[in-house]
Image 1 (tube, rainbow over the protein chains, first blue to last red):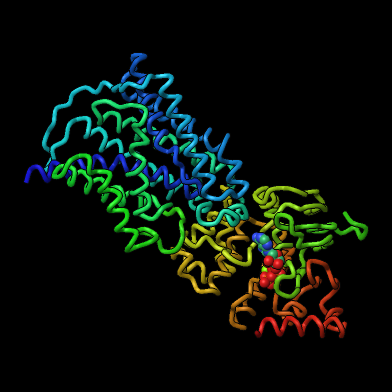
Image 2: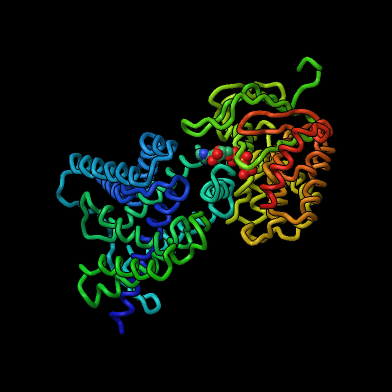
Length: 293
Length: 247
Ligand SMILES: Nc1ncnc2c1ncn2[C@@H]1O[C@H](COP(=O)(O)OP(=O)(O)OP(=O)(O)O)[C@@H](O)[C@H]1O
Ligand SMILES: [Mg+2]
């Protein structure tokens, strides 16, 4: 029994990481129509940002902040410098996919050039595991769970209660009507890429904290589960990303603990295919993409 | 100011519009007065919606000039025009269907942070149905309620000139009449209205000025009664429309 509950406990930690990553991916897609294949590298940038901070002697909290800010800046730059031109031109999906995949390669190689290709690690203190209810979590995992939940809560608050969030939802529903309502669409889309870049980077810091070591493919290896969660939930929806993340996170950890860890990705894809066979637009989508909380 | 001394709400001069390489609107000149209803009539595909998109900045002009209350606004972005007293209700997808009624209206008020309560009260006064349905998602509204919400949303931006693309399409005669009543009340409150209408009778009866658009050019402009008394034009065009709307 205890292996099952342990696995579910790990699954929840995984789920919160996937949820952060998938909501960020999903929101960027819903305001701009760009499926960001360089999304994983925003996570990697966050992790390396925290690493740099640690090497400068700062603590992990400051490291997370620096990682988050770096991811925000890179997310914004990606859109502002490269993707905006394609979005405005109404470029077809294949082009934006190719362009973002290209950005991913450039980022990964640049990170490799700067930091070297061997694995690195964040120094995380105090790996004592403790029982909370039926679950067994280390302090680091607890920090990730609580921090992640707080971030998701903040994201919900922004989407549901602020002008910025309402503008995001309006743009993903109907960009022209948003313009006709006086929403500054361009500015809002840029701010969304910034916010989601930061969110993804924070997920990357947490992911790096939960791994013994990591390299330049930290985030891109996480892309598959991110896509799976975002698509299962119905792309463009934060609720959907969270539900998708719970399913993917828990099922992959549980299956990984019984089979081999290498099955996690296979398992994620299997779930994705099954869900899409039954609900071609994802679990929560009624018609088309539209960011709802 | 124009020659007559009355400032026009909107003055489009020799506007040319199109998508990509295809030209849809050819040198259209249109004048809309404040506190009056200007109707645009024309057969399906004649470019009425395209013209409206040009007037509200969603479609940048190929050439020509656009003036809003005497100011040159050629090439301005829609959100900037909306912040300068232009309102626009598109023909299709005219509400945020995934948002609640209240959020739709709140969005309209993106231009007016502190004062929007008053505006919302006024919109609810005009459309009591919306007040009742505040918390509903716009997707579940009936066609008539949807069009009311679309109008209400546009009014929240507090325009002095409102562009409305076919507000009565697909509505029962009773609802269509209610929409026209609203447009007339909106005019009474001092707003200029430019409305695309397929129902020729309603337009001729209620509009102060009428433009007839055929294949992207103005085939007639004048008052409703002028058009009604122009037997040739009326026959060729009104007949044309009737066949199209009934078929
Ligand atoms: N987004 C677009 N891209 C390319 N062509 C378009 C686009 N929208 C409209 N058109 C073309 O422009 C022409 C005029 O269309 P428009 O929608 O302006 O007509 P309309 O008078 O509003 O018609 P209706 O009465 O059916 O609403 C049509 O030939 C149409 O095919
Ligand atoms: Mg039309």
